[in-house]
Image (cartoon, rainbow, N blue to C red):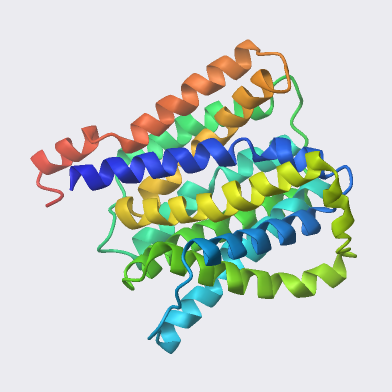
Length: 304
């Protein structure tokens, strides 16, 4: 049991380490690609990679299970990324970074409502959430002023809620008993199907000749094979082992990894606000994962 938990934590950490650096590849590709084009290419590549790695069919799914895959693909692959990208056109990236990090809070609430037997909400989660959000705000608004944009900020908040929905659905899918690669592949398939109408709305261009540029090719390979194929499998695997809430807490680390990558790769300055924000975010993560309050509750007879 403890070994499974350790594997789950390592899977979640690996996922976040890669997701935290994807902004660099996305930034490079945005010179000649639209956000929806990057999104489509990376998930098609991810789907093909999973098909090659595990060329088996999923058999015996019920209509209810298939519907769960459909909604998971809509929420976690299509709408989440589209809304996040659209939000970035209306509001500051720092706003989006902070608001998206609210996803673990939504995950906890949805888990409490729909997975009552799965994970219990405890005081340490909420304390850790407040501490981590304070740290993320320091990192995101480092040296800049807070500028609110109702449309962009609401879209980012909706994206965070949709990722929480995806996490809950992933937990539900893990109970079906299928191989994680197979379930991830099915979710990708439906996500791409829902993405196709959006391609026409955002003036999508296939133009594969752009990948003759080795820089573009390497970056889309990183996003498709690493950030999509590998990371969605490891994230879904972590949710299967740890639960939706414990896994989602690792989202707090994304701004920390992004900040570290900015300093190391893009040579951006490291400020005291970034340092303090990193410390607070890590403290919030540890508080959310701690069992201090669990022991106190057990002594008071509040939990079993």
